[in-house]
Image (cartoon, rainbow, N blue to C red):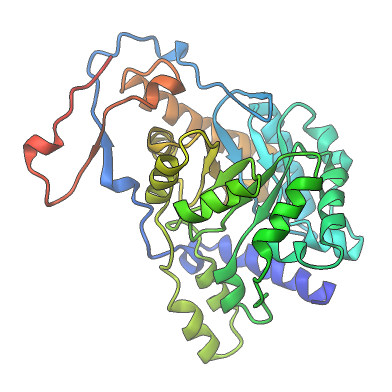
Length: 358
């Protein structure tokens, strides 16, 4: 695909995602099906709650990742700088958007070591599409993606649905698993694999771990629907109808977290896909996530300023802290044991009861 076409596509994506009415999935994340048992006597000081964790041996002040959201449009340079400044200030991780345009065109759009200079202390994750790994230059592109920002890890995003409904998208996915495995063998940093909003099943997660992948980002359904985004970009009514049929496709985020965690109890998991606030984040962690990612929810802030991003995440972090407080959880390990009630019309009152702890 020509560089100009790629840039236009990335600009289209930003414009559409910024208007949630055009991009949100009709599918629910599944978090509304759960609620915590309220602890009315937490026996804690709110300010003593410890939200710290680690990623790739680097400390994080809270279990958040600013997920990939930009990919090479000129304005991405400003967005990425705002995100990097905010992530450094907050002590949380940052994953940049696809580096494909920068790798193929030579126009870096700010994706250089300067980004690392802005955020020297946090985990910084590069990003490449799985489809690019199958190309002759794929492994070289992957290495360069890491080098150009001094990344701590490389995300490989897998998006077969988006490619299938996108005009000019990658149709041939034969050999992608093997390409990921080949990358793991030669790359000097860990490889993270994420979906982009349709979720990862336990079977696929196992296959990825067999290839040596270090971290799985389930990126489930319930947030941005990339099928809906591509429907907005469609150049014909037929193409739009094809894409819109899949607007609600995917594994809801809550289900993806829970089933992958059950299948892979020791695998580091990132939960993204429609995480709207700190209560959703708390539920994601309780269901099995180690880290929680947000992208579309912070995009408006990212276009404004680094301070706006900081204020967004300070709100979400405080929400998570209060969720810990009201479940009697002193830290994230305790939150993972907090009583979580699965609600539903077919459950009796007795089945909904759980003893609060604290």
